Amino acid sequence: MSSAVANDEVTAQLAAAGPVGMAAAAAIASARKRKRPHYFETNPSIRKRQQTRLIRRLKQTIDEFATRVGQQAIVLMATPGKPAQNNFRVFGAKPLEDVIKNLSGMIMADLESALAQHAPPPPLEDPSRHELPPLVIDGIPTPVEKMTQAQLRAFIPLMLKYSTGRGKPGWGKEQTRPPWWPKDLPWANVRMDARTEDQKQKVSWTHALRQIVINCYKFHGREDLLPAFSEEDAAAVAAAGGDPDDIDTAAGARCGADSGVDVVVTPKSVSTASASTSMPSPAKQIKLSPRGTATAVVTSSVSEIPTSMDGATVSALTDGQQSN
Image (cartoon, rainbow, N blue to C red):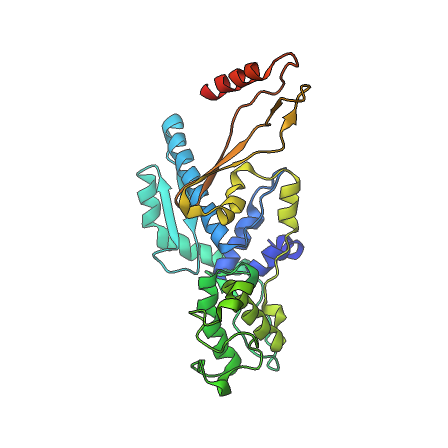
């Protein structure tokens, strides 16, 4: 654990964020590394989608294991630092599942004790520096660039309390407007966008809210509290070809996850010897469910087409493959 914290920036920031982050850091450090390693998803929305998808896969795997092997096996997920009703989840073969549920209190106490032994010492606070809240969402440090609009709207009033020392922001009163508040934004409640239509067209409300947070932390000289996870791991995964199961991280954000549409991503077509005939290379079809989870399906295609075939023959061949 200590070596993982020393060698990985993401793990170090998680470990310093409290019980939830420490549990996440320990899980990451103990995971077996693969040739194409996974990386911690710093975007809360994408992380939630990945959690839902992987839990569904775990349930299918544990059911198959119980049926095929005939052994008592369970999947246990524990999150210290969260409310009791949300920090312990177990599913699998009964009666082992019920036995583990009855031992949840003892398991959580032992887990919290074990994690506390590996937790890094809390950083020494400099009384000369302005106190601001850390950017932590559900116990996990989150870069401001990856906070959602709802998270930003809830966080900014708390940030204002620390920055101004007042219990209430005093929206609309010019004398209570902080000096770091963006000049092109009205001093109004952030729960609604009070800008003009022209301003709304130029900059999105989410981007404007992120700029408010950045301005505040820079004004007080607390850029150290702004998480800045490195994207090198993500780039390495992409360079290695990525995990096909992770395709929803890109598709869910761009394609309207709630619409249930099918998105077909087709690479550049492969030309044959005939100038008038070309066949597409395998198309990757991304099916988005109403919850935004995507699954990838690779359709079959003809890898090589004889040059003597005319257009009608090629069309008949491909239609036959599609019907299969």
